[in-house]
Length: 215
Image (cartoon, rainbow, N blue to C red; front, top):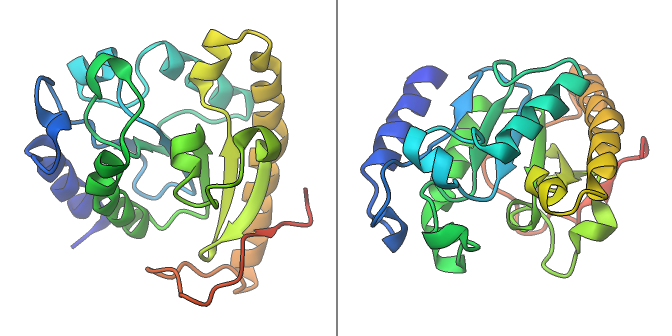
């Protein structure tokens, strides 16, 4: 099965998903979209009202800002892949619950495995929590890269944070301009040297996340 076929299969499953109650009172599942050969894989938190209506990720106000942030580093959504940790909109845009994140976890795992990106960018604390210990706060590691589970992961504030707190916009812009190109360049270097591996599952004895020297 090709990457495109795998992603299409996941999208079909998401649209019909009843693994948790988030499927109730929503219009569409939002599996994600983008380049099946993307080197950069963005993970947000959950679809909002606009995303629920359109069945696409990051197409509301936060998505418009994400488009601007991508443009700052010479990219657009056609060159990356964008998804969320949960695939249906939580009621009233509340935070996703642990059991909802768990129910959607396999979809995200399969998307990452299919695309095999060099760099994963987490947007917000709920996507960050998939890769970092629960004691780590996003305020302490935003804009930093770690090598985790054979990949480079960059933790970022969610674009919506800048919509609620205007003072964060410059911070987010600077993180994008500095961290993502550097992480991608380092990932390409490590991959060329055969030092960047992407295991399907995290080994039980894998050491803690390792901060990259470029940061």
